[in-house]
Length: 410
Image 1 (cartoon, rainbow, N blue to C red):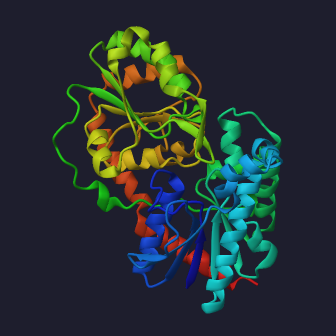
Image 2: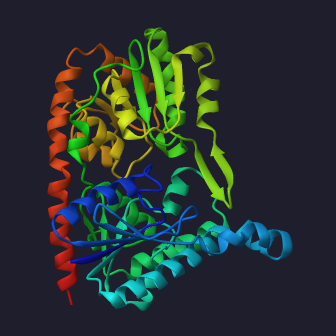
Image 3: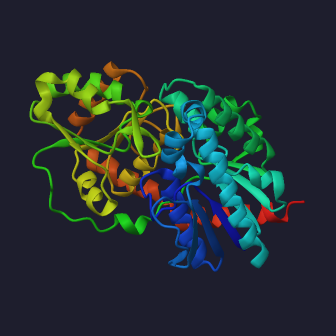
């Protein structure tokens, strides 16, 4: 098959998020199986088209947002757009640019399937103007993430929500990365859950087999890795830690990740300063806190591997690559119930541990309870075995069957 993926940033330029990780794992495996894979994305750094391990990557410019600094200076009315409609204009212009690139590629060799994520209506032009089978892959839309992060609901976000909903409504098929996301997205976009198929993310297990034995951090420590944002449960964890540190004075809590920011023409807007908030709630335990910026997996995996426990206190999570990656490393994970984490851990104490979200008292008690256990390594081994259920090879076969089914559908 000839498959086209649409994404804001390809995994060469941005290897940080779940969308990029999913796309990289799936694309590489699809190429191995003889399929033609093209990825079209936007970029501010390079517009070069190139081939990465058999994957054809096509980049377009960032649209009108590239001109914003000049427009703001010489065309005053653009300030209104910048203030009230920045994301709407940015995503429509990028989406149009991506669609135009697609049309050129499609003329050379017709595509069987186009897949685009559900963020910001980036793929809306495809179901409107193309007859190629179009799949919206649901990951957690931009507006849903904004609501979960308790960001102000602006006119800009309301319009982007409309664009996302229109893309979803006009798609030939919808596919979510978990049953939890299917339920949440159906409620958020007011659609029937039965219209959404579910296929889990796949993980490249080979990357987690060989990890250096040397510890980077001395002593016992807990670890959280991922974005430091509201919806990841940073407030809850901040309130839970003092009780844990009082019980274990030498224990460290490590945070690996970048803050949650919104970018507007190279200007970063921070909605919630998690690091500042955590320090504020743990003043007497500042020496127990360690913050490190986002690390590539080659550097991050050894830190996860040697942690006492991985703590993932999200308010809600669609799937949660962080949980699966930790399990693949043979680590015991404490995550929140009622979301995608639960579909990996299954049951508290089986492949990891579960605690109710948004409850700092329950979280601190559960962390202490886990630290008292002597079977963390045993549960970690079970978790590693469980991770095989999500192997990239297995999930890719499921996606191939799904693509074939969709391409043949009249």
